[in-house]
Image (cartoon, rainbow, N blue to C red):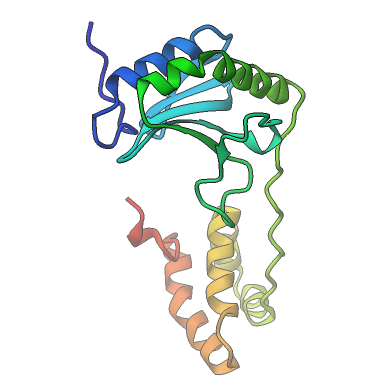
Length: 195
């Protein structure tokens, strides 16, 4: 039975290599799931590794790879300065994967042990945004307050960032007047951009 194409195999030139990586992962206790349209291997529903093919390489990424010992010095941060925990091991041929099969398995097993030990980088808490002008509006209008509180914290934060990113008070007041009808209608600030 032919499997669906891996959407993380961007060029569809790595089918055999992805199959080899999958066969190595299958030797572990990881469970295959589909997340973000591609295969992700998990333990206790926590992401451990994923695989994908790109223009010049096929890779296995470790969601908390920052905690791996990386004795072979093969792991790379795909997005330096942005990605905190994720690390990739990139391969340019099936021969390279086969030659490193034992080490790949060791890295995966270490990643599983790290996940079981609870090693993870916790997301940084964002500083709370307070808008005195918006709070005054909410105090004055119970319907507005009730409608605003019905939004998720994320959407509330979008409104507050929009108001408080203005430098001048008159701009803040103007923004408040523009968002009040949206809040009362239950429309988030950026809903029109979300599908």
